[in-house]
Length: 477
Image 1 (cartoon, rainbow, N blue to C red):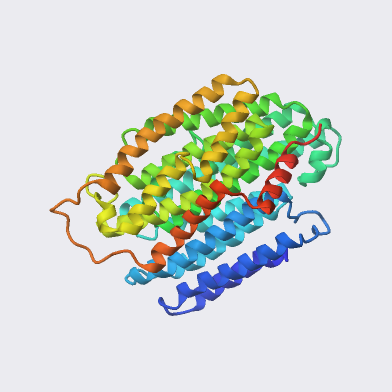
Image 2: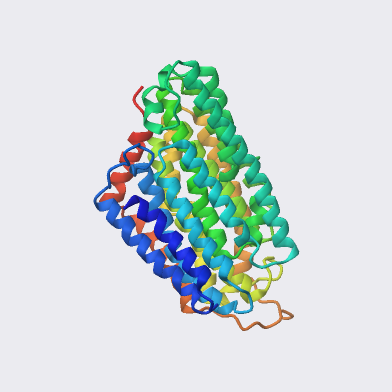
């Protein structure tokens, strides 16, 4: 079953490449996405055994990432049918095939318990996403693609160097060299502290670049701003989660080593820096898609802080991983609709979206309140858990800075979002044919419903898997 989760999307990618029709090809996306969701549910209900060598396994942490990825991809696949029907002038073979290859790579990342294989999976997501960012084929999109490729490739190269250091730490400790997760966790207290620290720094910088932690985030504003909305949703809600998973795997080893203060403080500092960068750049951001990129920088910062705090904040961080992925899907898909209707991403041009696109404008506004931690939406609960974890540990400075940055970010984001949604439609604005359609509104509406439901009621299976994953990260030393 675990191998099938990786192979089925690849079969879909091959089928999408071979199908000659631009109209028929997008229909393969929801078909294979449904198959993937069905297999994911089956794997959750009866967890398959690990592979004989231990390279492939599905634990509670992997289940969280896999579940969010599978659901988000299905929603984006349905949206893609409506979106590509509107973009008939653009060939979609590369987009459809690339999306399915990326789904396969993200799935492989969630079930990889060999850190080398995990690195390969994350690198594959980088390569498969690059041509999708270039879908609009203009000067700005090719600039964004090259910046994404260059910066993320450097980050992944640094992560590879970190893996070499990690493997060498086993040699120095006279252990059998391995990059398998379970043996590394079991023997972590024997590993060379200096080489382990060096490995952690390179892995944090490397995978942190892919995750978009500041100041390693410089590819995000361009890539998120120029990519189609559905690609932006997968970048923010899928690829970010895979990079976080890679850091969390390293975190498991570091926690088991016993010398946890260095690792946890580094994560908290990187998280606070990310939130500070987001707060500054969101105050005067008029491009609403680039605004979402800085929002992503903010929330990966929150994830890093929650991971660094440990304890009760871990549950909040993992829950926030789910909430951020779903809410970012709402925002990117709704913003893509607004962009197409106005032909602009600037709040000076795109005004009055509630009048012109009532559904998309309303979803963009609701997504703004959700992502900024407003009740009754689920991000409020996860952010509250992280902040409560900071104050509960007596780290009042960390908790106070989080609250300060959240307040500044709310003000900066509101200035742009409210102008786009509630402003008056410019009289000189050219009329366009695009309006809200079922296939481009129903997917983000479904995600928004999930975000609202999780804000008032958490299903017992989700609570259990979040609890199990939190305990998994709190490795007994």
